Image 1 (spheres, protein in one colour):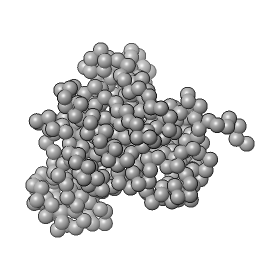
Image 2: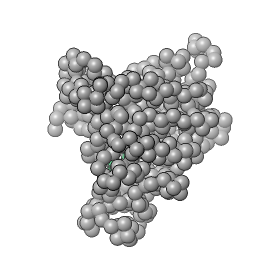
Image 3: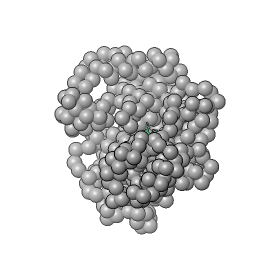
Image 4: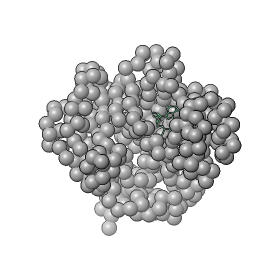
Length: 387
Ligand code: ADP
């Protein structure tokens, strides 16, 4: 028997990773309950008193089980098939972001075309459905280029940089040749990477968080500094671009917008993620209302909360697996001894090299002070054995 009080919202989330876990943590104080859909048992959100559906999220019947008796279905990844979401929506479920938004954003080529059509600045790009088309596009754009899978890439796994003809051969083979849809874009010699979380409500009302500086290595986010140490005019322009990008895909909910900053201060959109985002984890302790709570407010049709920073600056450092091992964090006690460091351990059962296992956030009087605290604590924790 279900003993939960009537009238309190229930959220269905496709995916049960750390993003679903942190969303569930934001849902509970609001009286909301959460059901997640995962493919296998043992996932981070399971640590958070969520209801679970196990199954394939691309199967409309399984998605239908997730959607039963929930107020809204949302997602923590962009991998789920938009057609399957559409099938569930057609049977009456409220799915946000909408299946149409998911269709455009989960295909990086369609997304870039949509952003370009809306007049937003993006790196020059071309479709590359065949090897000949890739060669022609590279000749047209000029080397180096970044070859990308249209769908299913994350943490750089669907990308390859090509600097010459041999590099194009390697990229074509590594990314799955014409069995996978590929496209290509110019390599942007950016001086910095920026990001902003934008949250749009069901009524089109919008809030955005500070434009942050992100540091990526091997295509994976390592550190985030809020606010980013940018010229104020540049930050304002980036915030406008980020909001316009989310409006261009008719987004509802939280979106992570990743941008490149060029030498002359130009801002280009790299990509937008139709979900809460790693570059917004600092908002849990760093902002009045976190990206997770604001995402829930948006998809439930509630008023959006303040995105103001609670301190002059905040910083986040990701805890990446050093190598294979259990999900046990070595050095946690030493990290907790760092005053002001907020440690998050996702609860994944296996560590792999480069896998996101947790993160640390710190606030500070300056970006440098916040970063120093977060780095100090993060440096004391290790997951897995270095290889
Ligand atoms: P994913 O979707 O796997 O996160 P992205 O396409 O966002 O991959 O790329 C990840 C990182 O790779 C970016 O943050 C950036 O550092 C680098 N990158 C991606 N595209 C380009 C590009 N066109 N020029 C230069 N660097 C790029």
